[in-house]
Length: 283
Image: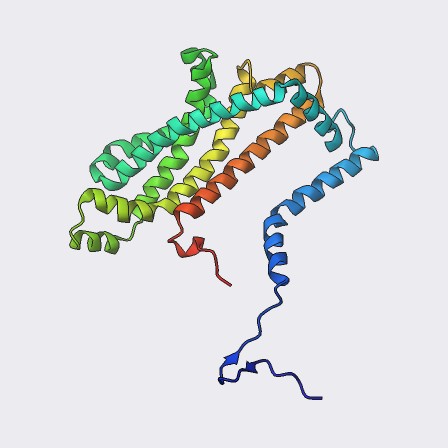
């Protein structure tokens, strides 16, 4: 029996390669979108199963269904929305302050050797001090008001953004910089069109790392001194032995961190469309 020819020839003599079935592309797109959630869903199912058969005690780790019920109760009362809103505002405020300062020092030290010589050593020394170890001192400085939480979050996100911004500026291809100068670009245009785009991949790496530090710092800050927020909700639940509410707060922190990372990756793809690593492959 003769095998089918892999190519089809038209009347004009042009050889056409058969395309893959169109049904394969939607499946691939759906698989790419849900692949990252398969393992979490399986773990939740296993967690629920082990809780229902009694292998996990409710006072140790409540079942996901019990956590969902606690979340629904808190949602109906308005407590959950209020605490999520307060925590989100605190996190974004600290990210804005620490991120802007870190970006400024990273760019300044990357562009100026003089600035780097005078400030980088001091910043690296401060970086090696765990910022959470400063909590007793921060409370003495600011008390238990919002300033203390803002300071801790800003300090936590400062260094990832600073280091990665500095690395990004320093690793811009010097040949591109020299080419820009040869074309007569002013320092401002050279920075906007050559240096900043070249440093953006490293800056986004620092931002994604800073988001994780942001939520970690906020969790600790809110559990020590707060009158609202997810950390406060978890501590109040601990006082009344409401383990399901404590687990709910932890899961919400994880979901908020994932949401922040997804938004950052979307912004990264949007800003780096010129970069080959972030271009969508065409079929």
